[in-house]
Structure formats: C-alpha cells, structure tokens
Image (cartoon, rainbow, N blue to C red; front, side, top):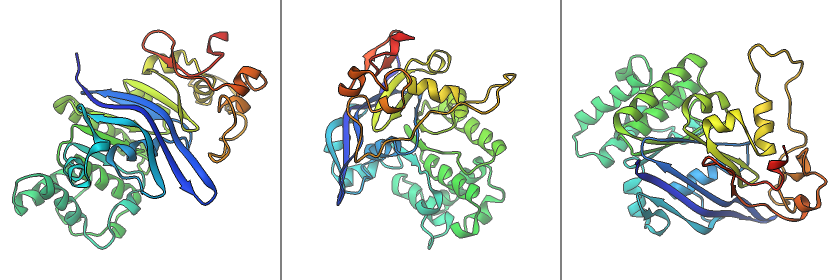
Length: 326
C-alpha cells in the first residue's frame, strides 16, 4: 500500500480586506499518496492556488489567515512549524512550479544564480557541482545551450523559456512532493508534452508525488490518478480520473465535461455553464452552485442548505443534494 505523503484536512482560509472577509478555501480535505498525481481543477478564483500556497506557508499574513484545519506532510503538521523549519522543506522536500514565471523569478539575478542558490541551500555540494547540476536541469526541460542560459536574466527569455526555468528549479533537488500550479500554461503543445513526459519519468524513477493544478482537462485526463473539483472555495467532487471523465456526478463537474470538444461529434457551439462565478464577498446561501445549476436553481433545499461531501461509491465523494436524481 502506498504511503500517504500529504493530507489536507478541513482547511479554511480567508482574506481580510477593507470590503470584508473573503472566504478563499472552505473545508478542503485532500490526500496524496507516494508516486501519485492528484489534479485540482475548477474555474479561476475557486481557491486552487490559495490551497497550494497554504501547504508551503506562502500566504501573505496579513491579509490571509488560515482559520482552521491541518496540513500534514509525512505525518508532520506544517502549520505548526516555524519559518526556519519551513524553509528547509521548501525546495528540497516540497517544491512548487509557480503560475507566473515572470513575477516568480528575480529580475536582477541571472537564471544560473537563482537555480544554483536553490541547490546550494539544500545540497552539500560545491559551487562547481551546483552549476553543473543547474545546466543539466535546464537541458532536461528542453532549453537549448543550457550553459550559456545560466548567465542570462529572466527578461532575456520568452515566457515559455521562463516557465521551463521554473520547472528546472523546482526539480533541481529531487523533491518528494511537487506542487505544479498551471505548469504548462505558457508552453506550446510540443514542449508541453515533453515537460509532462519528463515529470512522468521522474515520478516513475523517484516515486515523487504531484499536486497538479490546471484548467486543462486534457492534461488532467492524461496525467492524473485522481481528481478533485473545486467551486467557489469548496470541493464539490472527488474521484478517480476515469470516473470523473466517464460518469461525472456533480452538476458543475458535468458542465465542465460537457464544455470539452469531442472528436467525431458534430456540434455547433460548445456547451457552457450558465451564469458566472459568485463574488467571494457575497457567496449565495445554501449550495454555492445553485444559481447556475440546472437541477437545484429553484429547489428550496439547495437554496437554503449547504451540502457536504458524501460518499457516492467507488472512492468517490460528491457535495450535492440532487446528484442521484440523474
């Protein structure tokens, strides 16, 4: 049986602003086993990135505050660690590919300086060996002439190149857990496939666990073992990747799947989910999805009472009052 690497239990995160409390994450529970890839999907603003930043203790405090919950890494509650203890874990045990490479890389340091600094902070090797490792990592992610690139600055690289630098930096110390927040956003399809294949190969060789945050459901289908779907700060469905794609249960998950183009299917316009994501300062009562839901938009139970995740068979969990109706 695979060892559990990460367990997020009943996590609540809020941002306190002049306008009021923004509930970014509400009651998130998620676990990842050794060598497993778990995808976290949902529309922008649903709490995916905030959840991942909570794991590494990178939320701005203030205005962010973790109100409740536990984040266990190999049994150790990360929320109880001091900043110095967290720094030893970041980059070595737990690494992250950030969503915006231009703002994540320091513009006044060379690419080489930034990767080498990460390696020297966590590995007992000399500068020459660290430089060699940095060049090897740049080569692994498909950057041509990696030795020359070490002396270049972030502004000298394209968005796709910067994204690959972030991936190289994250993988440089062979982490046990990789948090990949939209890791292939700025990459063309060919390079995207190469990067994902690289992550798969490293995962096979080292049993690295991956928390994959993405909007690309094609990437999810090809790479994830399990999928957690978030909507308006809450998890609404959690299941194996095949179950999610073949038989989605939550109306929101169904909407996401129906919006995908399918080979051989003749349709005019792609299906869409009606309405918009609610303002986090003014979440609707009851089920947060009910104003957009074809099943519960007018049902008093859905409007007044918020459903919780409940077992729906075959290691699946769904947060919906009416998921069995269809």
